[in-house]
Image (tube, helix red, strand yellow):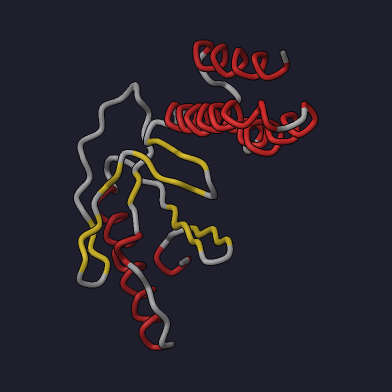
Length: 169
């Protein structure tokens, strides 16, 4: 990765490549990224490993306050990798402006679904069982990676805190 001027983070079978793009050096940086992905695929092939380019995403993080021209696509073997607007990293949703709105929406969607399902069975189980289900399926979702939500706009924080308060009542 260092030969291509990229940084890398790995977790189990998940890898993320990082490169800093500035306006003047966008094309060389994208070329480094493309060369690196091709070297990765060559390594996989030479070691009889399987690489799934269809699971490969390309996310360009930018400030929402400045306009950036769209990036060109990169190739990964015979596949074209498109730039996506949001991606997943270890169970969290990250959008291109790091607003975390998609993460908050995902948390609320999963928690609301669990809340509804617990409501369907609540008349058949004890109060302590309900509390266990709430902690297992709702509180755990609200608490997972909640430090990423630091610095969110107050509207997002207020709705997040309102949901937490609802659970405590």
